[in-house]
Length: 505
Ligand code: MSP
Image: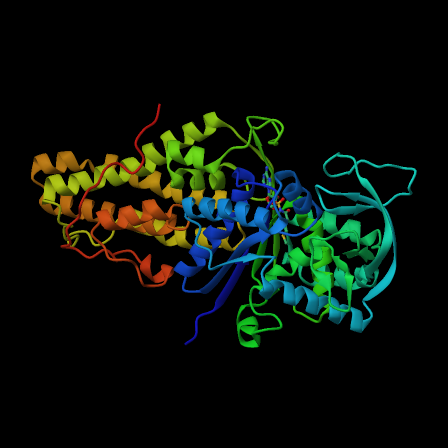
């Protein structure tokens, strides 16, 4: 039987930026989805990459005295390094300067032109270079960009327009019929009301831009960076080149994006797909933005949270855990250094780390490191908890409620710690109650095994350490099956390691 497919994407990152907690956030979220679905037995395709064309890159390269391609080649390496450090398990990394991508951008322009959805006109208006967006307003107005507040630049040149206005009704119908298309719901409502106000045709080419994909039928015109960028989601999976791969991968299950780019993903992208006759992705999920100790992160303030710096202090898994636990995915929030320390010490070192360490220590002490037989008490109160836990976690994962999933998992961690206090293994040992002690230690070890599986998408390195300490081989069964209570074999030898999360000052 063939496995079901799952295709998840991140935004592709500008090579004018650097990896920081803001752009690591969607990448970590997508990684968690990818890892979870692999665990559940899906054939997963996880795509990330870099957005390498446009005026911003052209100018950044000029400032550095290199060609745009050299600039992109330098910066892309930083993303590769950051994703490696953060244990990101992408299956593909697309760069918009690759021929496999540029070909598809050109093909799409040709299709649009032939179908009449692309027409030549004159663009007169304002452009925000940092956001790569066009704004309404006459020449006398000199508007500031409504998104970033910076000054805009006046453009007046012949341009091709994409007939976006034609897709107003079809888009509203799409949102009506597939309310999951945009999540969270309040974002969908924002998008709907803006679309109801009407859509103007979109200028999608520049003649003044050098660093962009030329139109095949009119090469002095070059592609607007957003049309180029959005296309990555299909060019990377064989659109127009490898029909078999494309049919297997597309449509994407979820595009993870920031709230700042929801318009492009929830309006322009689906309209473009309609225009070229390609099926819609199943979901666009917009996450919120991080500030740092109450302040907006910016180059001028130099206050970006750097994942490598936090990781060198707390470990990579703690970074991944913290960003997913601290914010409700979809809402804005603040990265506070004190909150990181607090969660690390109480939830990672205190709750989970302590449970694993004491469980394995007691098995070594009381049973020479061999998992005892639970025959005298084949079940225990933890078993029921584990069954409902899977259903809850699965619901959270399919609706991208990462923080809630972790909260549920930690309820179970705490329940297991309470079980230790209730059963008092040290007392059972003193009393010589070997059978009861054996059952207690088996059930605790089983709870630890199950926790290892459930935290794997969030903290893959710690999950691996737990598995090895329990003396288990890599898990090959689908998650739901692997989570069945009693899956831990008796008689295997454990090997306690160092505490997973040593306490920090
Ligand atoms: N290149 C476009 C995306 C094209 S996708 C077809 C782009 N790139 S970006 O590098 O500027 O931003 C990438 C992502 O990082 C966005 O989803 C954005 O929301 C996210 N973040 C950047 N700073 C952020 C925070 N401070 N907090 C949370 N996410 C933020 O846009």
